[in-house]
Length: 89
Image 1 (tube, rainbow, N blue to C red):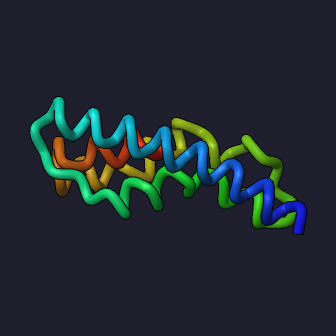
Image 2 (image 1 turned 120 degrees about the vertical axis):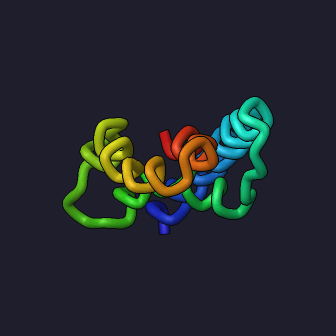
């Protein structure tokens, strides 16, 4: 129960910041952003709170790991992928 409450607190902060940064980036790049996808991707790094044995803020929170995972999206979608990458990091 306590862990679910902590995850919800982190989720609100991450989704707010992910929305703001992703939306701002999409405006700067003049692309349309999928808001639900921005929100989902912004809380993705906190999945480590739900996986036993993983330390919060560990490898899943790495900008390097996110960058590696997004390489294919950058190749396929070019600048349209940038707001989603910004929402994750």
